[in-house]
Image (cartoon, rainbow, N blue to C red; front, side):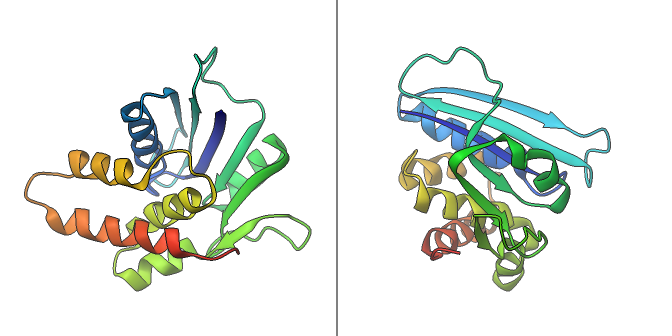
Length: 176
């Protein structure tokens, strides 16, 4: 099993954190992992993406030319990365702020809107991660939660709780 994932959005959407959590959980499960971050020059508000490869075998390169899963959190990222998705690959789109067009075969979820309803727009990334985990069983939810607990700032259980709630909400989303 080898899963190649590109997550793309804008700086400040938690793209890198999401990739780190996914990669760390895969390592805990004894899988081979690469994580390749790329930041736009603007950082917050600019473009950001990361490439994660998770495999049962050694990985030759962290770079992904064609991806199995493409997760798009903003409109410019769709234009930039849609040609990188393999035929029959999984495309997940943040429909709150991305218009994919009627012909695009994608799972569409309003991640940003859901995060606002949960009380914190910054957890849209965790809603999206939950939706990804519901579609692809790449790593266990238990290990994702374990990594989130490990990364949470000391004494900030509120951050952990809202992120866990967002993750659980994402897992429960139906086909978009």
